[in-house]
Length: 343
Image 1 (cartoon, rainbow, N blue to C red):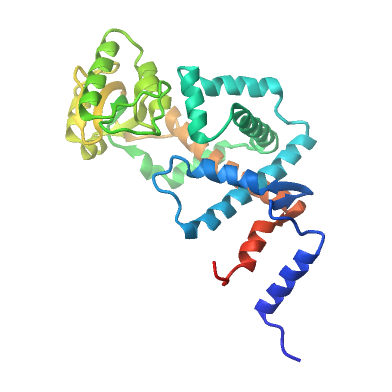
Image 2 (cartoon, rainbow, N blue to C red; image 1 turned 120 degrees about the vertical axis):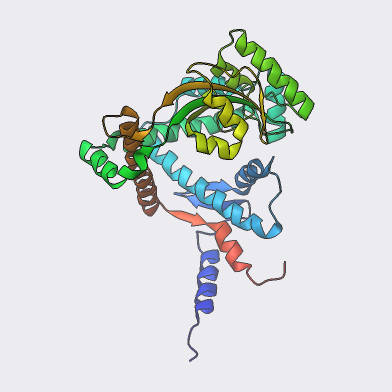
């Protein structure tokens, strides 16, 4: 009798699965505790992921991306079932509040509808995603966040291990409004306002500077018009920066910041390789060795410990829940079965 090879075992397992009651039609890619995830649902998630991407995925990358998306959809379905069992499913009123907040990103209804069209989504699709995110957030808060504690001993221990990293140079807490000289389809400001040429960017920056000098709130202007995706939503806040870091980015920026008083906005637009900046000095720190009496140091350490525990517990909770679930990933089986066949 010939020995059974690994490939033979795989083929036998796949054949057995296809002939069992765990098989599924082509329009089903996975089954979670008896609930199907359809090919259409996965395809919608896939299209949403690649829409607006700088480059579409290569043909050889598509299966891998879909497997990643499907794995997340499976995990979400397991979590949503747990939330439902615990009575934590988002209510209609909670979804309506989140939906209203979501729409504030778009100044007009026409812009909102255009964004939906570009993303190939409907208002109901958005509400469904918001319901899922609120539900999962409630589950995480109950099962994970509420159980995390950070002790003074942990904070002190982490500080002692990283004491040298808190010997800081003089720091400048700054905020900026950035206007870039190129079009950006992913602009994050609330007005969805985007300069598309160098001349347009310069004129926009000068206008915003005049408005700030005229009394407009700097943080509000940043949220509405800044084209920096990393800071616009935070009112342009860039936290504390050293002069060295600012100089490495652009010496003109460092020079302007160095001569500002706390609370003052630079009198001119500063042009760098990144675009046109309007900058404000929020605070200044003399630097030197910081200890645990500094509230910012303590808060930073507390957050670092919290984040580490949060990530560990989330991963553990998700894996433990998946262990208890009955999952069939038919897409994975089909990809494996087609390996080596002519495409």
